[in-house]
Image (cartoon, rainbow, N blue to C red; front, top):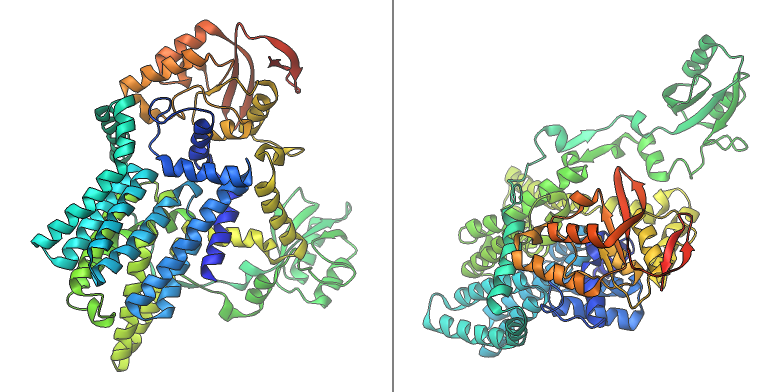
Length: 634
């Protein structure tokens, strides 16, 4: 059940993707269009990342549903594996549920699904090997390293380190460990050799390795990439707080009569316990009600100076559910429901910092506590050596998968910490049960607080509460809930994906994509000089550059030359830029080329950015498109 819910939740997230989520889908379209990795495009992802998206597109069509199925299945499988593994390590279904919940509420970004599923499978195979180490399992681990490498090279490296730790955890620093590691590594190297051969015959093996390391180094060594997380729970009120009833009181609108005086309006407000919170001039006010009884409401709407009200069912003399949901009503009426726990992580940014701190700390806690405490309260297979080895694997993934800003990226590393978290909670609870008196209560409270803090931090960082509020219509009406789910369905099923925006207000990127889809022949390529893969995807046009524009690629001199060569080869009729042309690209050669061969035909303004459209000077125009009358091409 948890696996299915996690998959559905991830599919909902996929219905409203960010621009990053389109990266690999665009590259998959490049491959379908005849481009080859290395030779024709440069990207850090690997064939399995593109191939999976391509397969989804072939089965479900060019719409968001295809990627939603991929990420939904990945999260469902991951949730199931984590649940099963934690239960086998702890013997506790409760701990397994708590660990699985972390994956479900994390809400990882769609393109980050390999960071979840690859490590869920790797962790399962890791513990299967250390429990019963066999040659076949060692070979399987080596094969999984290759699978991870084919998704993205760094995943293969991190999991390879994990495999080495599994060998040492199972056999100690022995000759057998080295033999098994060599066998596993041999399978990995053999399996990835086709990719390495392709790289060596196109751009060169040295160039392939050097370019990848350059980009990774840029990402992980940039200023602020691995800052120390700021712990947000600092005061007692950050742990528990009792809110006042006024925070949950209903807010309604009052429009006063034109002839009402300030004194009379103030008297009415005092009479019915109304507190002004906002207004549109002296005659229109939004007020908070301290008493929402029918008697008070009837008295208010019958006041001679009250011309009208908003947010009140005047016929029934009550505040309707659509403007005053059940949970808010209950908290207004019952003081004990107004307690809030761990309010320090209520905000998205603070929650992300807390998640990063917890995910960095959990592996070290397991490593330090494995011998004196932790292994005593887990199942026999979780020996101290194995816990230390798996904790070290967690350290590798923490520093490899997490970087600033933590409110965006911390939840990506959820898999290994979720397993470690389940082990710690189970052991802490069993320690409490084994004690007596006050110590039992203190340890039990500590276990509960650890569980609540971790799950809440991950949920808020993953925007789970706000997403659930939207999907349930904010508990205001069934119609609102149906509308939210209808939008999810419309986004996922629209084919092509651009069709969803018909008749709706469109972001600039969608407007530009629609223009290219309508006016650029499908045989021609498009060039977008900033990171906006969603334009290529929605337009259904291939990119004329070697990669999706990313300033990090400026570090690679020969990649800049190859990019210019490809642009010159395809001579794209349309080029989009953001900002002034001189500052739009970090590639001066491309800027010079555009100045010579293109002319500006239009621009759009949005959120302080200026988006320009450039047309090749020798392009053939057949008609005009849209309100801007931009040219359509042959």
